[in-house]
Length: 71
Image (cartoon, rainbow, N blue to C red; front, top):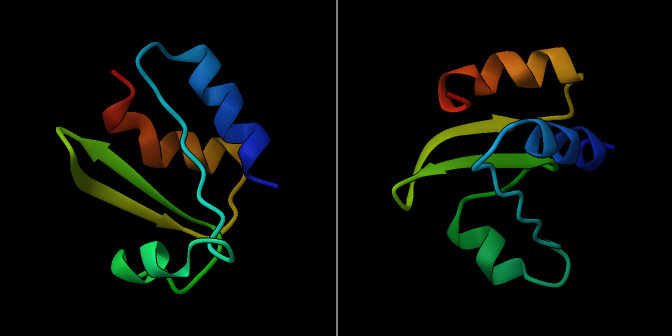
């Protein structure tokens, strides 16, 4: 549901990389990041998580959340 919106945002902004993790296939990785709700989106800068967005949101809300990181 959120993936197409994130892919569109990535197409529209240079330097954005979208990576997906199937938590059913990778429960240990999900647990190590404390993911308990789906979808959970982590924003990374310099290899560090700088923002976590939880829950499905419309494009406008995601853009507002991501605005500080989109340049």
